[in-house]
Length: 79
Image 1: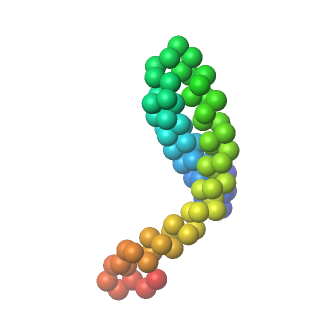
Image 2: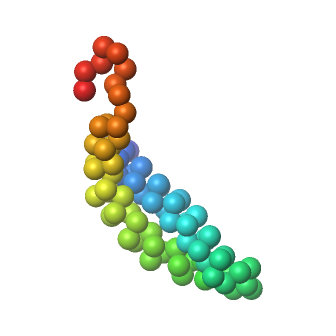
Image 3: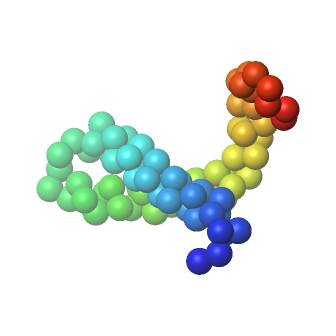
């Protein structure tokens, strides 16, 4: 895969993992360790991921700029 796709692939993986974890915690808090927990989790995760992936792609450049404004560059490095 071409390196030019790295930001999209990163957003894909990041959004998948984050939405999986967050939906799992939310589902566990709501339903407990019910017998159908895995199916409830999957039903919560997939729609969350469909929202999280494009959101990460749109928000990531803003987050990078914000972090760039907060963090100082090492001495001698020009931004």
